[in-house]
Image (cartoon, rainbow over all chains, first blue to last red; front, side):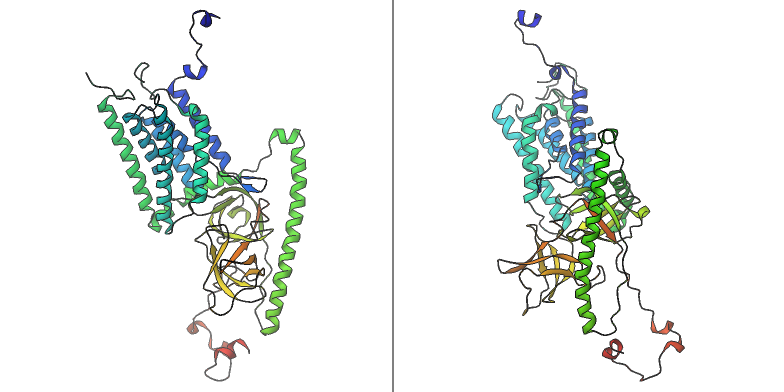
Length: 183
Length: 295
């Protein structure tokens, strides 16, 4: 028990993992949850509100600032969502990138890692912005105000699961950035 | 020395990435706007159908399912479900035929509808997002599904095929706001146009002003417009808040399968000039519309 003797707590495997493996793991989680979401989802006859998994990546990955690799992944996830939701190509790409940009902007303005209030409020605002952009785009493209209730339910599920599993989408530092620069 | 941001990036690098993000967002927006033109939207159809084939076409049995005997049990369940579906189809057909018989009695020389043979497919994906409410079924052109085919389940009408791939079909549900189904009351005979409501019930428009439906009566397709055959069960009429609504039959019996039957084929009448002179019957030079029906 060298670490106990020296008085320093042992680091977990996740904390020692670099941003690229974390990004890949997060992308795998999003792809797995997204693919499961394509199947009919009912529990005891009740339909389940499935989360928009790509938004976890948009919110979580944006916390360390802008980077090209998360953007590319979010574009790919967005195009897959467009096809699976039968939306015009590009809709979910816009939603994902807007939320990602918003998350990065908040991260550049406030200390989202250490300020508890900001750390709680920022993701809520980002999910709300995602919901608004999606609802506005869907309503504009479908020529009528689309139903908000299933959308709200899906976004609530997205938010609740993100609150539990946000560590999975925390890159620690931006991919490609050397150790020591990140906060 | 360049000042680092909270995220530890240099301002120059940050502004370049910001520019890339804006370029991506604007490119996506341009793509969305470009698809408002049907010609451009159709360019992406092969991509969608190919993706649909990949999502909906796989029907392989896993190794664990073979070892545990789950595959056998599932096959047995599928057989029984198929039998139930077949029987439900006969039940729906009986209702439809009774209604049709009445019409036959009223109208002489009514053109009968040929019996239809459908393709039964498993629902492999469903999208309940803010855009069109659709299902993806694992049968397509290769299995004999026609464009615009009618999808049914044990509860009644499910929707219509709007996108057809080689091994998959995307079905626009009747619960969608954009679907328009000409319907009629089974008992009252009142006709209306049905579309999906916001609360999961169907809304009715173009109702006659004086007559209304009967509470709880079955709502059937009226075949007006020629997109759907006559007499398919859609749901039940319900009076809610002064408006007539429809509780969808398909919602109660969603067993994960749909049967896709070909759409009714109505041949375009040939122009008068193309009809040979020998086909024109001898008789009065001008015949009324009523004479045309009741010859």
